Amino acid sequence: MLACVALCALVRRTAPAIGAVVTPRADRWHSEPTPTMGGVAIAIAAVLGFGAIVGQAHTMIPPAAWLPIPLAAIAMFIVGILDDRFQLSPLAKLVASLIIGAFLVFSLTRSPDAALPWPHTLVATIWFAGVCHAFNLLDNMDGLAAGVALVAAGFMASLLAPALGAPVALLLVALCGALLGFLYWNRPPARLFMGDCGSLFIGAVLAGGSLVPVLQERTVFPWTSVLVVLILVVPLFDTGFVLVLRRFAGRSATRGGTDHVSHRLVSLGFSERSAVRILYLLGIIGGCTAWALVNGGIEQMFPLAALLAVVVTLIGIYLARVPAYNAQDFAALESSSFAPLLKDLTFRWHAGEVMLDLVLIAACYYFAYRLRFEGESLDHFLPYFTASLPVVLGLKLASLYGSGLYQRSWDTFGLRDVSVVLRGVLMGSLLSVLAAVYFYRLEGFSRVVFMLDALLLTVAIIGTRASFRSMSLIAASRSKRSRRVLVYGAGAFGQMIVREMRANPQWHMNPVAFIDDDPMKAHRWILGVPVRGALEQLDATMRRYSVDEVILSSPLINGQIEHRIREVCTELERPVRRLHMNIQ
Image (cartoon, rainbow, N blue to C red):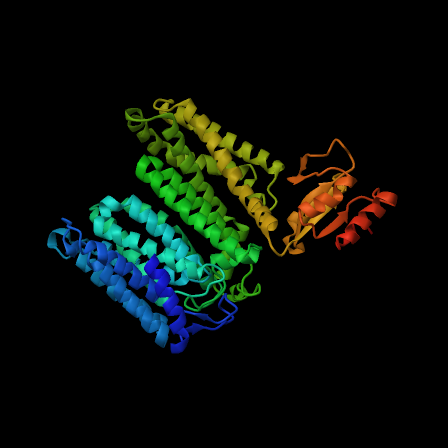
């Protein structure tokens, strides 16, 4: 860490002399020329810290088991240096990363006894290149790539240390120290960028480290790969999100742009710092989920990983609707070959919604068994779960469709839609019980399982449907571009305008407080907005909540009351507007 802080200061001074300065561009996020190639400091500091200790340590692990990883990272660092100085083509970087990945996989498995099946070799090579470029793409906002890599390296070193071995774990810890030192210079507003040499080096260390425990498993599906994906959830999610949407929008996948997850969070109204912190939090949640799987057992806690996958998918669907490139990123989609397919399936037939419910039905049914049984009892009853799952899927999906759930909009999901969910879930559970009676005479089934399943599925469906409104409310309340509005009058008109503000984000209005002269409403919450007393509390409330404007919601607010309101707003230099209702 200390070495990186000092080396970054040196790089920052010398970079302008060699032209290593990134100037502002339309597809970049910064607004001032900034020195780059801070990756030189990261790589040197990490290798020095690693080499200083591993060179004096007496370990029983042969160098052939760990030395290829730092060597592959140094090779990717050199590729990054060449790209920073000579602007390599995306194809050249991809080919180089695949070549280095292939030699890394060979070095880790070259013994005939450790040879991998050819599909595993192919996947491992592509994985190495993919993770390297994922961190390269993630380096799009101040402090983002370095902070996410710090979280990922820390979780990987702590959770997978026994499988990694001491040298590889030490390399990850050394990388954590270097990233901490680099963040001193790279936190917003950044005074130094890492460049491709830094992002490719970081990606290579994490990709190489993640391959070690996965390649040790001699199974068709290595369960350790689930842990690795959870730890690296942020770069994998961002890369998949960007590549899919660019493909659908007819844009080049290799062309830079402000369409990443972080950029869309800022488009929602979050500050740059808040967007970076949200992605830090997502990385921490992924690491904590991996920790739960390690300590609770992967097979037992796998529904938790499935839940995180559903949440990330919902976030991706929501962010895909947020405009980027000045709302023109999907202009090409209207004339592309994907347009009819997306319109027919996603918007008319709600195929994505149906597939999500299919996953929820299976996960809730399985989790109900896990809650009801354990140990030998679980082993005894799980075959009944497996045998009955197809018919349960069919019956519950048919019940949800018959209830009219798929005719409801996620954006307007409310209390009236809850009754539809309850009707569909209860009908599906009842039909599932009748099917168990008909096919198995209820032998091997538990009534408690069906009750738990109905409860879990209800919560899951309501949670997914309400997620869009919740994310919109969170984004609106945290938006830096929204005006903070105080509504005078918490009656029917006041509540109506609060609902409209939340339903129309293009208004850029965030209701932060009510003022109402009715003492029965004082110090209560209405529609999630606090009522802060009567007229005498207006001045203090406006100061406390940094109110930008006041809206008078009722025609009954007039005379002396209106005069006093306008006096207070004039003193604080805040505008006053009145709600008018006209039907013609």
